[in-house]
Length: 267
Ligand SMILES: [Zn+2]
Image 1 (cartoon, protein in one colour):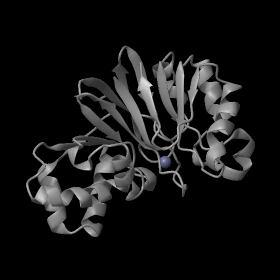
Image 2 (spheres, protein in one colour):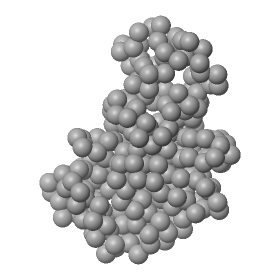
Image 3 (cartoon, helix red, strand yellow):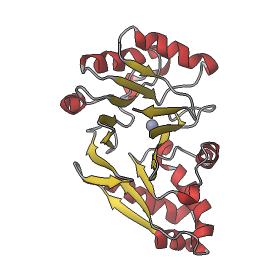
């Protein structure tokens, strides 16, 4: 069975949720998708029973704080085992050239050279171009440029048990990608806030969506299962119900509004 383990589902400003990142897990291993913005990546991996030392595949969609900064905490934690020679297989970090530059430059300033030397001994950067394909844990992935209005950002599509699964990063889907998304079984898309609270959270000016706006688009594209993440967290325990209630008015497929650490089985 292949599972999406949502380590974090919050946007870049949350304080209670963790920032959006998740693991695609099957019996061959894990792919960590984004790293969130802080040390809580370690805690969330622990809570999901994933040993950070065992990670062999990491993808970072873009270079914003809430997606990239967790990697430096992972580097810090992995540097010890790496220096002691305990990491036997290389760690593949899949990312576009902008993310690569950010990781290289920032780590120079914030982590000791001896840590980074140990990390670079076990780390392989896989610098992605639009349309690149890789097989990771026996799943075929195609990485693509989501044509973001902001910083360069990549998503991916993959096939899991004959389901097309598409991850679209953290911007409203560009209409240039509608054909790719049409009819997909599973789509992961951001929803920054409720439509009724757009004037409070200003989703649109940040190139983000409301629950209503993304639900309408995905309904028109005949998506079967829609997973919403990258939300605000002002509603506490009521968030899931409020978001589901709004989304179901516009999207008749299966709608998921996961909490941190929720698991979604792809079947
Ligand atoms: Zn973000």
